[in-house]
Image 1 (tube, rainbow, N blue to C red):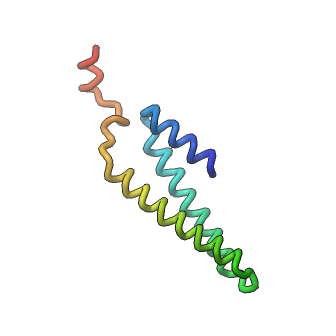
Image 2: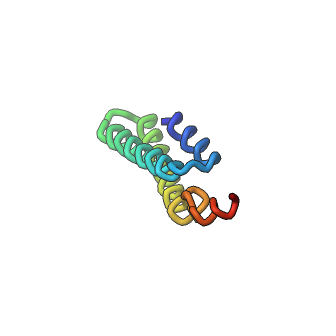
Image 3: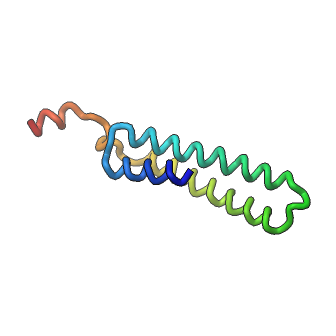
Length: 91
């Protein structure tokens, strides 16, 4: 999971045309896997304090991922889209 985060961050900095889609994939898989892990930990009644705290940290991670999704949706993506007018100006 961390590798996917790192790769999507690197490609976001490189301004590749598929960077935004890679960020969406990384955030969606993080939300799904954190949600599944939280459900598994919550369904274990004798898990104790450690499993509850891990569940709370997963919920915090989901909230951070949702905030990042909202930020990615709200940003201007013209840098990451192949703009023909921009490429004609440089030639």
